[in-house]
Length: 171
Length: 65
Image 1 (cartoon, chains in turn red, blue):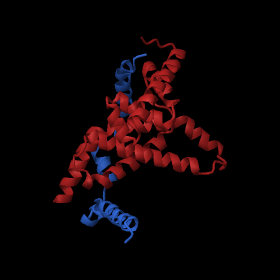
Image 2: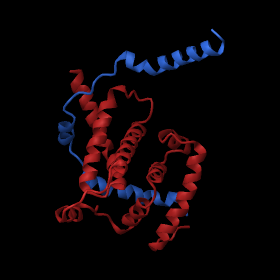
Image 3: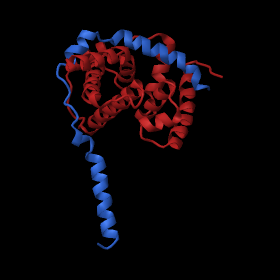
Image 4: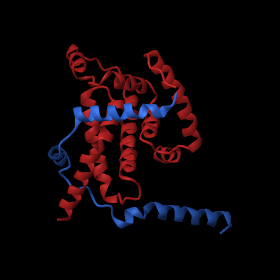
């Protein structure tokens, strides 16, 4: 009985909040298979830590914290892995066929600009656009508030430059 | 540039990505077949207990005991 209610509660939460996870997977992984794998991995990590989640923080904050940790762990593992494995032509064909997200032009420009930021900067701008305060961003990413503030200023300059080259004009 | 101007575009990005990748409740349910292991009381107390022991140890060696 308890198992069912725990599962139902978790499913309700993920069904309503999965948009957050998909948006992060889309930013960090260009291949649809990688995005799918990462989505599954994040959901499993959330499920594992769900019993200890006691609403001390907002649901979305908890999801972002675990999702970003899982993504950073995966990226660290990928970077540590040697890159000298040869790929066959078939792999390239599959990659090309399944890589891109279908986005409208304006959204694609924003996505393209954010995609060029560093892994940490992507996380910071995502949380900023989700209207988290500097203190909350610092807490989620275990950074200092000053570091977050400095990085947001730099991100602003970078994004302005990247978006202007694509023809966007902001005040 | 005001970053807040990007918020509507960000919302649009999230919606479009979700529309292409959304999982149904049944797919999610299949993914989480097993119940997560419960966090036992002593596991929750592990870190505070470690901090307490380290503090006692440090106090012990610095006070000359």
